[in-house]
Amino acid sequence: MTSKRLEGRIALVTGASRGIGRSIALGFAREGAHVIALARTQGALEQLDDEIKAAGGTATLVPADLKDFDGLDNLGASIYERWGKLDIFVGNAGVLGDLTPLPHLEPKVWDELMAVNVTANYRLIRSLDMLLRASDAGRVILVSSGAGERFRAFWGGYAITKAALNAMAKTYADEVASTSMRVNLVNPGATRTKMRAIAVPGEDPDTLPHPDELVEMFIELASPACQKNGEIVTFKRKS
Ligand code: NAP
Image (cartoon, rainbow, N blue to C red; front, side):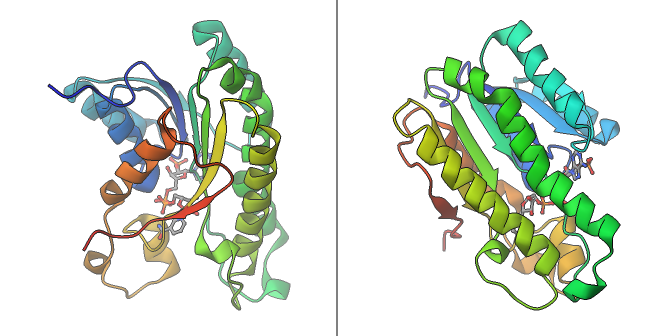
């Protein structure tokens, strides 16, 4: 029998209700992690919980809005009280905003992009840092995008948040480099999710990788053995 690679690890995954985050949460639970699954849609989290239990895993559901920044402070306090540490933080949740020329981007759309894609991850880093340092091998994985490195017309709002996220993760990685922690970014590439279907309507989703195909890469980055730090790891489909 092969041993599970994340046995006993405590892992927070944001955006666990669907898409890439849901696959990560299920994949981590299958590898023995206790998954703290955060998203707003409670029914979808409950379905995930059923699947995790059916696979022999365990989860704690956190139905929450990432824009509730005080709630993110409280989440850190709750994790501290229950486990005293956190082994893995996957900042996956994200919003696309509107694809439109920058001057046309509505301030409320800009504010949500910044709040969910950038500020929430900063607030979680702030809230979870002590817990990740208390782990023997704290692992942070922030989900970015190629849009954060290649700047194209109409993608500005989203791209600016992902460029900021890249700067945040690389800075944090440098700060923890001499500890047992590791901080990396993932560029999933085009993946078969609701966000992608909205971003590129008319594309045949069957031509894109299913989020389950990305899970192996996340498990490697979450494992105590991972020594990468401050890197942007891009998903490459196995041919
Ligand atoms: P998705 O299917 O739209 O899922 C987004 C997830 O984020 C959902 O679970 C959603 O849950 C959660 N979320 C959004 N706003 C939230 C909020 N205010 N509070 C809490 N949770 C919130 O997107 P995806 O394609 O899986 O994307 C996951 C990550 O990959 C994102 O960071 C995205 O930018 C990145 N990415 C995706 C692609 C792609 O092709 N799919 C490519 C490059 C990068 P609720 O709605 O239940 O709250």
